[in-house]
Structures are given as structure tokens and as C-alpha cells.
Length: 264
Image 1 (tube, rainbow, N blue to C red):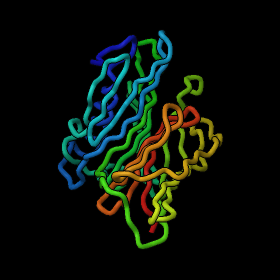
Image 2: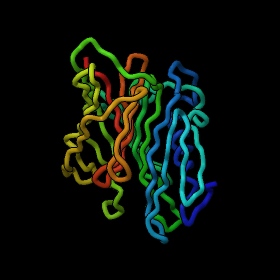
Image 3: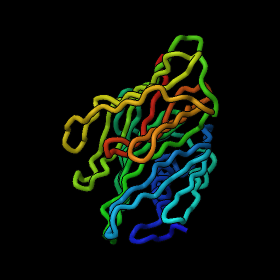
């Protein structure tokens, strides 16, 4: 069990704290029509007094397995949130590119998050006030996944929205990152996903950062995935008609999440 390893706390505390904040915002877990059946959760990397460690995460459906030093723990977002929730009851503090956004800050957890009707994505930082750990950036995507690839009578389709992230370098103060997210499928006869993150800024300094792009990612079972530690992206289609795409990524020492909605 990953209760305490070295100087890092049980990583599922992140999910428990995040869920508690969102449930409060949603009116205490009120039953609603959106079923949460999918969780995508990032690896967790942090610097301790024993050096840098990375908790590896593998997700399938609503369940993720966290692994570190040969130990593992299974977590389920549906077990924390309940079987369903209503993202549309959340109150945004900002709307950007048609995405409802908000920010929460607590004693151990701070995160930016965005949502549509069928999915929510978040990027944040878990801190350890009483331990010699700089902090642990994380990201996640949850929602009502289709489990199938989209089809279209049009030649191409675009989903547009926002990416959110945290710089993984403690020297940056784990800076908050935000940018535009656009996902395209150019040919539904041979579907490949192209992801473009542009106009990326460090929200702490307002400085621009390099664009991020992934091209030609194949679709499988209503999702896509490519890369490995340090340079990876994965996403799922959410909503009954593949209206939304959400997921997580890691590149250029930024760990983050994205949410997009299909353009008319």
C-alpha cells in the first residue's frame, strides 16, 4: 500500500481533496444525468529529501493503479464522487474560449479546472506543509466517455478549448500554465488525431511559452494515447455524440490537462 513511502503521502489524498471541493460546489453530490465512468490521472512526480520520485499511473475505465517502488494502490473516481454528478451546476469564475473555468486553493491542494456538460479537467499542485517535499503537480480528466470512435459525414472536424498545466520545476514556483487547445481529425476514412496547444502563457509571469503539438495519433476505443514519461498525451471522447474531448499530457516539464468541445 502507498500509505507513506519515504516522505510522500498517499497520492490518493489528491483525489479525495479534489472530489470534496467539487462535491461542495455541486451541492453535496446531488444526483444528475451525467455518469462518471472514466478517469484519466497523471503520473505524480515530486522532489523529496531522498531525491526525485515518480509515481506511475495506469488507468482503465473509472479505475487507476498507482505504482511506486514495487508497491501499488488502486483508486476509483466513481467511488469518491458517487455514480454521477452535474458539472453544469459548478459556478465558473471565468469563461475562456467557451470553457467554464475556476480555481480553488486550500491548505494542501490548489488547482485550476474547466468543464463542459460531460467532462471536467484539472491541473494542480498538492503540497505537504509538514514535510520536506517541494510539492507534487498533477492533472486529471473525468467524465462520461463514449468508448467508441467518432464518425462523420464531413471531411474533417475540430474540437476547441483550453489546456491547463503546472510547471514541474520547483524553481518556477510550480507556475500555473494556460493556453488554447485545438484537436482535429482531418479524414474520418483514416482517422488520426492532431493536437495543437498554442498561445501558452505562464499565468504567474504572463510570459509566453513554446507551443506543443502532437500529430497523427491513431484512435482506438474512443480514445488516443502516445508517448512516455516526459513527453506524452492521452485523451478520451466524452458525451453521447462525441461532443467533447478531454485528457492529460506532459511535455517541456509541464504536466497538465485539456478539455475541448466540437466546433459547429
